[in-house]
Image (cartoon, rainbow, N blue to C red; front, side, top):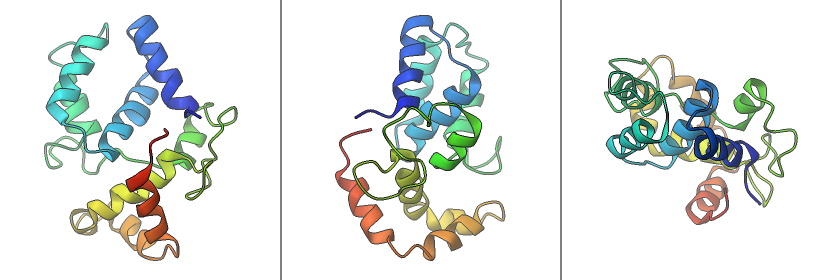
Length: 158
């Protein structure tokens, strides 16, 4: 089982050296952000993998927007989301084996559960930002948070 959005986006980069900014940032960047990939290494990969990976664009897009690694200078909040947002913004979810509405289980969307693990990992920083404080409050009300966190620590399938 592989997330349709992730496999299709990686295929697009491999086959064409390009994907639209939604899959570029909201799928590849979001996945990297949720899994704490090194922003500099990700920037270097974007710059070499994309045909439009110009040096004047990639640091701003990846470090500033996608990875929020500049501390909020470019973007006032991390560009992170769960499966529900990806479902609204793309057409990847309908044919996918993962369910964007589910946090737990074999068919739980790795972006949905991964989003809550990301919010939990950065809850102190996010609680101080007026644009993300509500997500921390929402996370604190999840009755299955501990199970979600444990599932994501053990997840091997994306």
